[in-house]
Amino acid sequence: GAYRFKEYVEDNGEISVYQIQPKNQVVEIYSDPTTDAANRAKIIPRKITGPDKDYFFAGLVSSFGNGLYMTNVDIEMGTHDSWGVLFSRNSNGALTNVSIKGAAEPSGGHDGVVLQNGAAAYIGGYEADAVIEGVDRGIMIRNEGFATVYGTLLIKAADIGISTFSSGTFRLALSGDGKITAPTAINVNIGGLGYVDNHNNGVSIDGDVSVNEATLSIRGGTILGAETEIRVFNGFFEYQNENSTIEANRLSCYGLSNVNVSGLSLTNNGGNGCVDN
Image 1 (cartoon, one colour):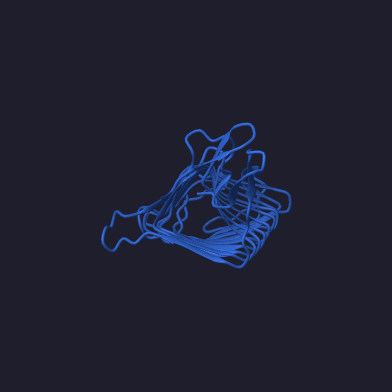
Image 2: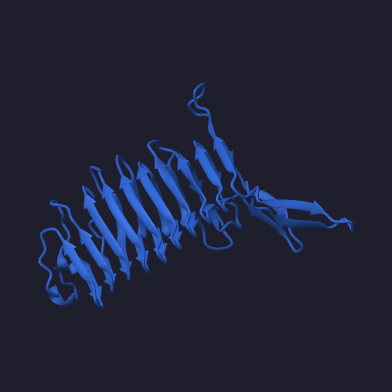
């Protein structure tokens, strides 16, 4: 992994490490399961020798208008990785049936996938190997990045499942066994926009929901966890599901917030601060 790093031997014999970022190139990494269904390529941490110690990175980067397309590949994050895959600066790509697993003992925060600065990508698949786990945040979208998250993808995060910041946008369309499990399943911030249209037989959002100066719309057959709490700070939130089991005591609103939930008439019920149209 971490092909962006290049090691050079200087004239004095010391090893120096530089980063390279190609422009307008497309990289495709995939496994061919036609002869062996269990055949999967694996990206493993690479040791980079620094001036003070060894570092271990596996994270891949697509930037400067590049494309990165991965299918049926496992990524094992290194101890010093900040992300498994980064899409940045108007790049694009797709992670199809890709598994990303955080390091057992990371040196800092782990994000499974990061999209930023106008980048866009599809993340998901319909196989059991479509998993993001062992990370702090599953998917981080910021600075006008866009993610389409779909299929039976499982996100298991220690902190946040999907997070947006500064006009990050996502569409979430899970199905089958697809599910987000995290203390905060969805966190939409500062101009962020999220549209959720899941079609699962059971719970697909297992964790709290936070909307801060942003917009989140949840529709279709999306089922929230029995303990899910929803907090809205100067934002807009709607949950349209005729089988909704959300009660007013699971909602909290602050500032100029607008909330619409199927089956509820919200007029600051129990002092929760929420009002609807």
